[in-house]
Amino acid sequence: MRTEIVIRHIGLVLIFNAIFLFISFLISLFLAESSAASLLYSALVALVFGLFPLIYVKSSDYLTILEGTSIVVFGWLTTCLVGSLPYILWGGEFSVIDAWFESVSGFTTTGSTIINDIEALPKGLLFWRSATHWLGGIGIILFTILILPGSNTSKLVLLNTEMSPLAKTNFKYRAVEILRILIYVYLGLTVLETVLLKVAGMSFFDAVNHSFATIATGGFSTKNLSIASYNSISIEVIIMIFMVLSGVHFGLTFNTITGNKKNLFKSSIFKAYISFLFIGIVLVALKLYLNGMYSWWDSVRYASFQVISLGTTTGFATVDTAHWPSFTIIVLIYFTIQCAMIGSTSGGLKFDRIFIFFKSILKQIKSIQHPRAVLSLKIDGNPINEKTELHTMIFIILYLGIILITTLLLTFLNIDTLTAFSGSAATIGNVGPGFAHVSSLGNYSDLPNLGKLILSINMILGRLEIFGIISLLFIKSWK
Image: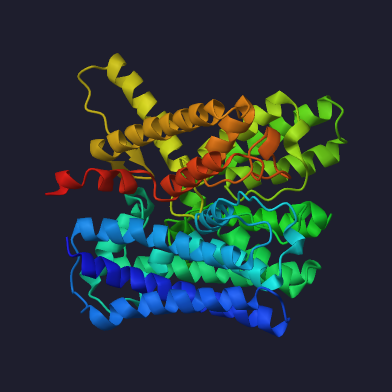
């Protein structure tokens, strides 16, 4: 592996960080805030360490798979490290570990926070916090690929490393065209939601920040009470619509806009995903109403927002779910694990894998009934080969195994079971809020430092879909 080439590409990622850090600095400078210096110093650090590899290392027209994997994994780790600098330099309630946790949570679009008083943060720092979501949502590596001066071959290696193979099922385009489609949809949704939220009554600053968090399915808000702070039906409806859109395969969205036959309305996975969300909303609303917690209308209102929020891994909140009935918590934990579709900004297992899992069960039942039959698994006419099917099953088992191991580690640190389990599921799924002490309007500040470090590893594992990091641990097997 050519280490210098890996460092060069990571340098490009740092320059991208530097641009948004400098924008955050300008906001703080304009408002004469205390965070201006910390943001400027962080921008300069990112710029210097980003430029040096570009100056001293020659570009390459190709990348090996190992180099591509290293660029993605270490690019994300370096980005999270640089992203924590503004918090550390500013101080406030940020320790080094808390700054790392907040940065990882931002870039992985998890939305878990350690901040007790979000509204006390300077606006420049709030913007940087939301920008980490937006950069991480589509993938800062993918943004970098678009501006890479290298060949399409090297871009393809990075794209294949960053994206799940299932995400390209509905595409019949080249690598760079796929990337452009993703970014066009991403930018378009961000601008459209910003305009609608502004019209609905948010300030322009809040509209931009919440659009960044929604389209990235992140969940960082500028308010302590999240979306509940606005108490606005129109704002909630707009955000729910865009949470659903952000949880849908961007390729299908693009195909729908452009009139392609392979669109949302023809996708069996999309139809099943929407059906699951609807069933979840009905079940939660019914239980809340029968328990006398809210009126029927308020039960539907709160259930809709929370199911969609967790089911798309966004993590916004309009109500505190800490005291909801156990039945509703179990339903919401299921959506925390399932999450939205592959090809979106959502984290989690991804609904596509759940869909393949159930299809595979039916296939096995048919194979028992008809031992001599040659059976194949298809989705919307696209064959799913046995290699992909096996990879899906292994991923699901490994994913659930990591939740179990993380839960055991947290309970060993004397964290209660519901907090440990829901926090583990919420962080590896990049969802954000869990239940008990880390519920929708709570935070992770009271967890021990070791617990925060464990959960930050969980977030990165979830964002990189586990195998990328694990494969680097077995470096000798690449030879």
